Image (cartoon, rainbow, N blue to C red; front, side, top):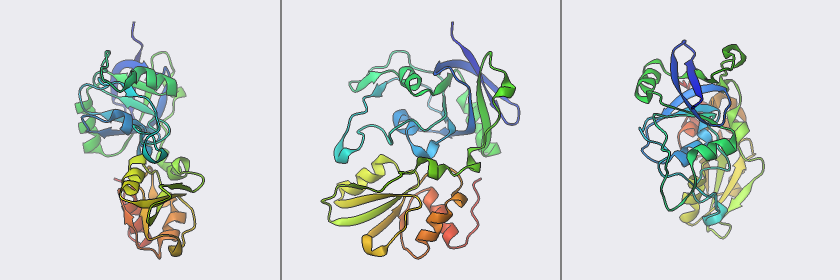
Length: 265
């Protein structure tokens, strides 16, 4: 018999479903993603660090999970980082019989190996509509039999999530590249590094708070990432005198360096 669990939102609304993956209860910020494919990439995306990720496509897991083999430039061929960053996965239906030439395990097996719970049988359309109307919401996935009060709501945006996901030491990719790009890792995805290196760049990825010297690069890239950019004061200070190209959260960082007010909602 399937183990049951509930997704409980901070306003008290509940979504019942069947547990898969790891048998653990977790809490965090509830978000959604609308892609038809790419669940291995989404789950390993540092931008979803500590979030309960809802996928709106009605069938997930149908092509399994590929092996974590090394590809071009020493980067994982299939994943966006070295681990699953999402705290939980919320879906409509889990495919029980994955089929794809690259598959080596099921999504259920992969989540169990990483200690990540999943919840299926949820009306993801209703949940997504609620998130869109209400804005960012906290939630917790509570396995039946676990006292609800033992799993408090946790707001990950009250921590420096960028510091948690950023590389700890500088690392060079495609060292023979002619154009020197320094990428500030605020939660960088492997494919961002790959795209730069494929275009002939020597990419030096540095931690989020690494000092910057314009003499060390021809171009400066600030990656996207999780959480509240207000915690990235070291990054903001370092890029204050730089001209850089950015994506997603890094737009907020460059706005903050210019003195603008940034809202997360």
